[in-house]
Amino acid sequence: MRTRPLKVALLGCGVVGSEVARIMTTHADDLAARIGAPVELAGVAVRRPSKVREGIDPALITTDATALVKRGDIDVVIEVIGGIEPARTLITSAFEHGASVVSANKALLAEDGTALHAAAEEHGRDLYYEAAVAGAIPLVRPLRESLAGDKVNRVLGIVNGTTNFILDKMDTSGAGYSEALDEATALGYAEADPTADVEGFDAAAKAAILAGIAFHTRVKIGEVHREGITEVTAADIASARRMGCTVKLLAICERAADGQSVTARVHPAMIPLSHPLASVREAYNAVFVEAEAAGQLMFYGPGAGGSPTASAVLGDLVAVCRNKLNGATGPGESAYTRLPVSPMGEVVTRYHISLDVADKPGVLAQVATVFAEQGVSIDTVRQQGRQDASGEASLVVVTHRAPDSALSATVEALRKLDTVRGVASIMRVEGE
Ligand code: NDP
Ligand code: HSE
Image (tube, protein in one colour):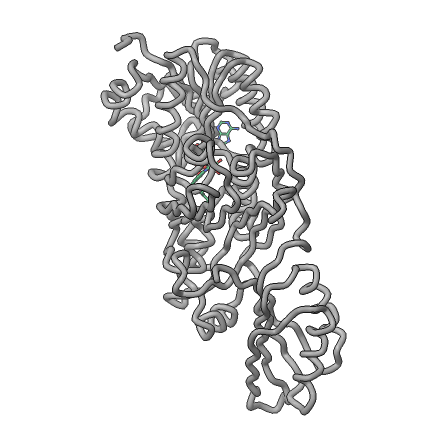
């Protein structure tokens, strides 16, 4: 074993970074044996230098991340700051100054992954990011390496721990939305700005990364259709229960049947309680990968939190250090298919639509006619009078599979009917 240590710079020492530092220290001997050389923490960049950081030599702490990555003797930079800048500049500078990079930064990879991969390749360095998608769950490496000989057609799953935690609490314990979000934040699951979680940006970034790797193409976060969970109500969850379903925020990446395009979307959806994703609780994530030869694979585990995410970061650290000692680099970006990303309107799925309607003769026929005119076939209808003075009823329509564009046209036409007082909610139904 080489005795001269490989030097690691840690950028960020928050929820994830502090766990990375802890495991690097407590598992130092095992890591050295697995890598073939010791790894040494050479510097830790943070924003607030006076904060007490247990187990970290205060002499390693710096606020000058730029100088740390430019030192020239750093072998690996671990970026767990998050956000676009200064993370992007620091990673690029790390490549220029001799270091490979391990990052957990899905926002940056989804925004600018192609340029970062190009910079890594130009300088002969590695860029690894297992922790960027689904926390501890090995997913990036299985897609990049284990399934490199297969053809992946679909990736579907729960990839955001915070929103799964919130929906799970709302469903099972009747907790309020804000209360559940506060708990997820306190547990270290949420992003620095939890809007990224609840509005679906975090899951959309992960969907962009997964679609790119799975289909050997490039998908930018702006090409991912995104809806968060802020509009999901207790009534939606209760309605899902009545249908034998639950509500989950799903990321779905699909190759078109003709193989000529892909779609990527993130939105809340009802799934049957019998579906394996329905039993994914708290901040756990689960992802199905459907590949031509392998069939259906399921990946499941903790999707957020300091320790699980640090596990993925450390796995990458070992891989990158091994490559460095062997004078090699791991796989870079594979985007040769250059498949276009189709708009959401072309996605075909089922819908659950909840309407407030006038409770009088002929309304059901009017509503059914609108669906028929747009070519959207109805599967089930449930009407319930309000039993109050409003003269209104709740009408819940579940459709057969239809293009999203046809559904949008249907809803637009429904809103114009005098007898439709409001569209209470529209939710897709998946997993059947
Ligand atoms: P935190 O907010 O807990 O930690 C961020 C760290 O970066 C802090 O130590 C902060 O310093 C430091 N920092 C911020 N800005 C700068 C700067 N300009 N220069 C130097 N240091 C800076 O975030 P997390 O640990 O939760 O997340 C880090 C990354 O990991 C993000 O990309 C996130 O998306 C990703 N991730 C997080 C997961 C999680 O469950 N939390 C799971 C998977 C990925 P200080 O301590 O002084 O404030
Ligand atoms: N905020 C993210 C989540 C962290 O809740 O899933 C893990 O990527």
